[in-house]
Each structure stands twice: as C-alpha cells, then as structure tokens.
Length: 252
Ligand SMILES: Nc1ncnc2c1ncn2[C@@H]1O[C@H](COP(=O)(O)OP(=O)(O)OP(=O)(O)O)[C@@H](O)[C@H]1O
Ligand SMILES: [Mg+2]
Image (cartoon, rainbow, N blue to C red; front, side):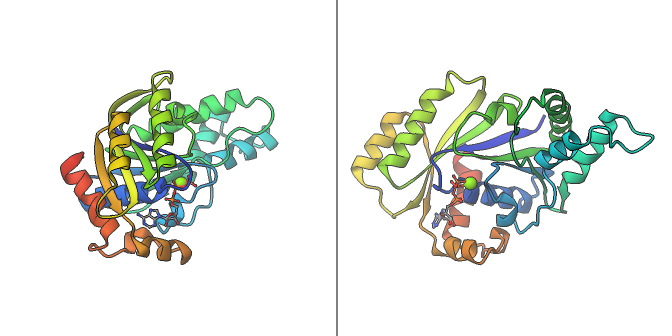
C-alpha cells in the first residue's frame, strides 16, 4: 500500500505549490516510486512540475462514452479502458503523474467510472508515495484516495479567513468516509513571526502546526513564467521549509 499525502484548504492558499514541493522532496530524497495525482479539474500540478499533460482520466471517460462501440478489435471494454489509463500516466524517472481531469459530465457514467476507479486504484497501489493535489472542497477526496489518507495537510495562507476555512474542513472530517492517520497545519506566505491572535486561533483549531512557509517571491515568478518548481534553487525559502517539514516535523 502506498503512503497517501493529501492537502485541503481554501482556494488559492498554496496547496498545489506545497504538493509540488512535496513531490520534489520525495523524488530527490530517493523515496520512490512517487505518484503525483492531480485531482483538481482546474488545476495545474503538471505545470508546476514542468510536465505537459496530454490525457486525463476524464478525457478517457469522454472518449469512451462518445463511442462505446469504438473498441479496437481483439480487445474488450475492460482491457481497452485499462490501456487508455496506462497511456494517461506520465512517467518520468523521478516520479509519475496522473491527471484526473473533469469529473462526471451529464448522464450516468457509473459503469465506466467504476472500471476506471478500479484501474486507478490498482495503479496507485504500486507506488511508495502518492501525493494528491485535490480541489478546495473535500467531496472527492475519499474517492481519490480509496478512503485512506496517511497525512492530510490543512493549508492556510496567513489570514484568519484561511484559518477559519481550515477549522471548517477539520470539523467536516468526522462526517466523511475518510480514514486520516495524521493531520498537520501548514501556514503559507507567512512573515517570520506569526501574530499572537493568529497563533491562538490556530491553536484553538487543535491541529498541530507542522510548517510555516515564508512568502517566497520566487514562487510567484515561477508561476508567471510557467516554470517547474523542480528548478527552484535548493536554498529557496519555500523549498527549505517543505524539506524541513518532511525530514523533521512530519518525517516521511
Ligand atoms: N509561500 C508562498 N509565497 C509566495 N507565493 C506563494 C506561496 N505559496 C503559493 N504562492 C503563490 O500563490 C498562488 C496560488 O498558489 P497555489 O496554486 O499553490 O494555490 P492552491 O491552494 O493550489 O489554489 P487552488 O485552490 O486554486 O488550487 C500561486 O501564484 C503561487 O505561486
Ligand atoms: Mg491548486
């Protein structure tokens, strides 16, 4: 079974950035094989990792539904879909990437979804680590992770609004069909010293503070230039903060 690391938090607080830096750490530390999963239909984990994404699981579903009879001869539905899933997997020496793409469109795709889910589950089991970048909401997280998350990082920027969103997500966790082994709070774009009001509100939420990631101007620059975060210098404050997190506070 792979160790699953996932992220939750309000929109735009830095989840994808931290996910990319976690993938960077794991692959550089030789904690491989690593699978990065982009489970946010509007996201760009591939881009932040310097990869061009050509096919998603959502595309496969669409292609199949448009022409369910278009299965190449000699194949049945099951092995046809499995071949497509294998093609959608982007394989690199340091890590692989799977992009989930669009969620279900109109109509019931239950059968196709069930088959695709079975294949993605099978695939994800062969990795040591699976890093899942999901959308801001939590609705799909349990499906994407087969209900088990080893470490869930709740991410907030340095704002009370972000922190309250983390509090709400924390409160929702009980009601979800999700087995979370460890929780950690990550504060991004933070100044060197956190304000006392922020700290006491963070403490009230009751999740251990796992990392403070400073405001790192290089991140915005790389984002604008669509550059891979794998090319950030090892001395970048955001890289150092995530590496310290994963070697010291929440060792992976
Ligand atoms: N520590 C940081 N310092 C400076 N800029 C940052 C930091 N973390 C993230 N950013 C920038 O903030 C923006 C949003 O980050 P990101 O895409 O990682 O957020 P997100 O939570 O994944 O957003 P969404 O909810 O839309 O998926 C990006 O431009 C990113 O470069
Ligand atoms: Mg994101």
